[in-house]
Image 1 (tube, rainbow, N blue to C red):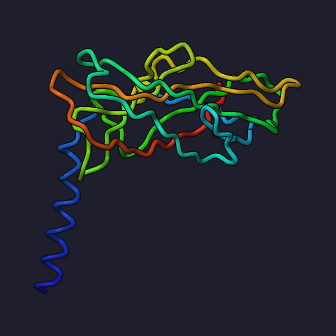
Image 2 (cartoon, helix red, strand yellow):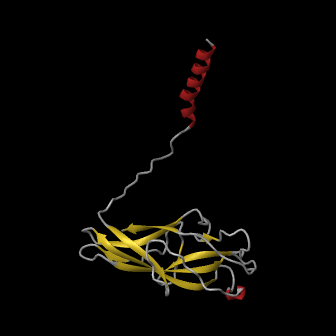
Image 3 (spheres, rainbow, N blue to C red):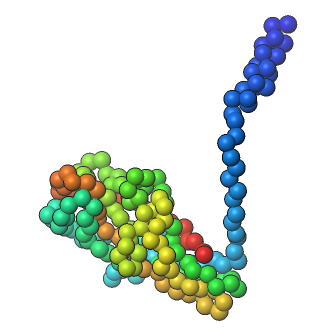
Length: 186
């Protein structure tokens, strides 16, 4: 009998707990799965890539290279070469940057080192024109390679660089982060 009462009590709680969750609206989601896919090779200035993973070394700079909050230095071009793109519809390919190292306040990538790290510095991704991409909102990420409809390859250039995140002093130290990306077909 005690088991029955306990189960009945738990079932009763489950029946009434949904009443506390009221709906305020509905989000309708649209999307598209395309027939476009590409292979990608990533490389940086002077270092041709061999696959979709790359190590990019930003230049060594003095702490005085930064002029204030949000100032950048050490621009390094990274090329995403897409090839063997399959699909019948013309699409613009861009990279979408995301991962666990993303600072959701700035939209840039945190320095993940805990020992010997340079504080107050993050890594920023910019488009080929030098406009910062906020990886949270994907703003300024409109320059891509147009593929499909007979074109099967192209190149997308991005810039990686240091960015000073606030007005505090920058101490010498190392900077390291990992940036995950996916190809977007728009």
